[in-house]
Image (cartoon, rainbow, N blue to C red; front, side):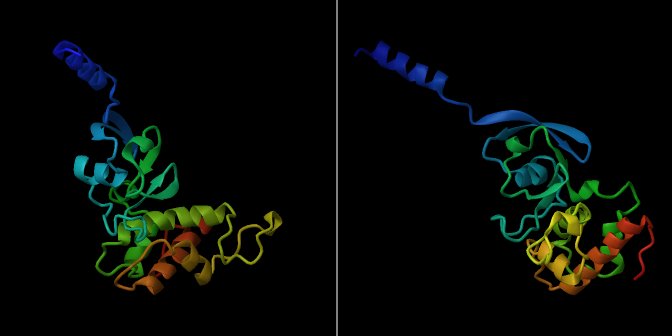
Length: 200
């Protein structure tokens, strides 16, 4: 094989090699962002490193601590295990998109009023999970501790055990769990009654 043929083969291989990056458009907190990403970029790194949305925290980077929890189409996801390219076409909600301008969401207000945080590092993920927990419960989804899972039973009472089980994917090194459970319960009550007042 002469040099020309070897060069031609190398060129063809380069042309046929799949691309390792893409330009994607993500809808985050109701706004569209277009950015080039390596296909291996996680949603967490796209949020923090590419878009400067640093409210979502990087904890274990292995999907075990919940600090990076965001909502994808209203369902919680650990963004360190979610590829950014796989989030294209989905609605992403981060902690920056939870409040209504300067008005805190009732879940955020409950965490503030009931001391549901200490250092605050896990709090964005806790709040995003709490939002999903409250909606999942209201929709009647059972958890591992739900006694009666029959459809006619309806939503189980949102007891402390139910909240603990449903929030178990979010760890808090400071140990603010008691206050977190109280905050989720208060925010669920606000949702159920349609009131905006949270009693500390």
